[in-house]
Image (cartoon, rainbow over all chains, first blue to last red; front, side, top):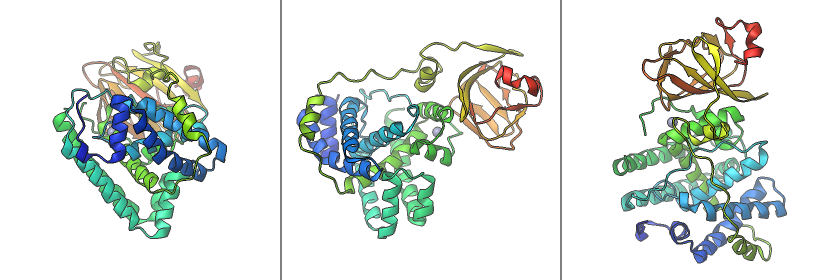
Length: 187
Length: 210
Ligand SMILES: [Zn+2]
């Protein structure tokens, strides 16, 4: 695995790459300190009891440790990637059988880290956080409800109206561009 | 990755992401995601919003000792890897097949199928259609999601190649015809038994389970 591009990475993403590439426990500890209390908040909002919520947080963070080899900073930032694991974990608790999962991505060993693309992804997350911070409180709350409380996704736009559409198209455009860049280096 | 022109509709993808899509359809979505970078990125985009919200959330303190328990758990052996794809079948389809090649049942006219799962919420099967053959014309009650894994078919909605998904709702009466070249193999989920107009009389449908 080649060296990542430090200046383009958030601290969280850098720690996740440390876990991926060097099984670095200190870095994992920092990820735990950051994400575990937030994941617990997410699980409590989703209606879990305190004890169960903590068990799920442990499951999710353990999956972060074991699945780190799948993390690709060209496609996701650390927070989005951890969120996806938490989302899937919660889904499987509610289903009779686990939700079918796509094929795991092959490791991109030959791929040189592309600083520009990683940076663009980080900026996109920054723009997104900014856009979210500008939402009216009730809209922000509706969005949090949709992402944290297991509401059907189709209700998000109903609840938030235009801003979510704007956010979605913005993030879609951003990722379209990133994907296009990825194709150029990994056809 | 091949060029894919027909993707998972927004509402289906959202329902998959929310985890409420019935199993048969979820397998088709997961199989498409295994082949389609674009739809995978659509999910990653939504998860990026989730990640921003997660980062911005106010944490709730964990119980004493949670961190030590976590660090001690890291030494446990990792879970076994998920089954991998094989040939034209992506990993989620191989999982349904139990890691074995399909065991086809002849349906007549060279058409074969294997039912992978069937319950009240929907049924999932693999279909094998020789080149140039028509799948008997059928209408739908409810919804059908069909993913091409090999070869191609075309119908009134267009041409569908490997990776393409056709979502047919109520009322669409279509007659897919397999393209020339390799036999068409597709993965199809339905939430209601198909109504065939020909080939198999409706009375026989429960026997053939199509
Ligand atoms: Zn797609």
